[in-house]
Image 1 (cartoon, rainbow, N blue to C red):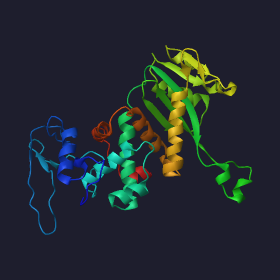
Image 2 (cartoon, one colour):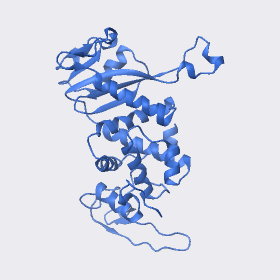
Image 3 (cartoon, rainbow, N blue to C red):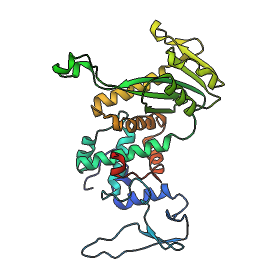
Length: 311
């Protein structure tokens, strides 16, 4: 980069510094071969030619004799975009509370829109994969919402038909300790909602929902019990700090991001955006640097190719 960008870490504005920074996170105890797991490796100094500039950060494993860099096996692998621009993109996406659009990334990073769009989706892949491990403990608020177009935004031809705009249900589980997990679901029926609660909530947790019939009987799956609030009667907090305000706040942030930042999200990629907002919510108490570092660490083993994403 010819010009430094304020607010962006120095390591994200220089290629050599960017590579060293990623290596310090991915290999905190020294280089490890991604092919065989050996630590007996050494650095190579490839000679640049008129046709090829040489690969920076190249290492070779003595046991398996294969070459590699720190990007192998991560979302950065086989990318022609400089690593420092990847780090800048990670910084922007982890620091932006309501997300940042691919058009904005393409303008700020000086790359094509298609490249920025694919970069953002690869980063979302690492966000979701890195934050959905294990079951949620403690007090967990659960709710569902619908994402999709509004009736007033449809054309006059479609607006007055009986068919309503198709919306996609999204389920979210938010703990009082600050963890969030959201994903698109095929329907908001009792079987789907309760099976996801069983899959994502630990047995010792307490579950808080509204009084929708789909949640009846959830208490038998958790030792902490099941408490509800009746929103239809304008009941939002019951004695004992019983409410679903945290998960409602999460949905508010998700919808503000969709309306104000992305404007439209296809059903095919909605789950990825839910993972992005879940990651930032779960890391909301961390600094921008800590959030970016945790994401870089989560990129290991999370390679995503274009054909796989569009399948």
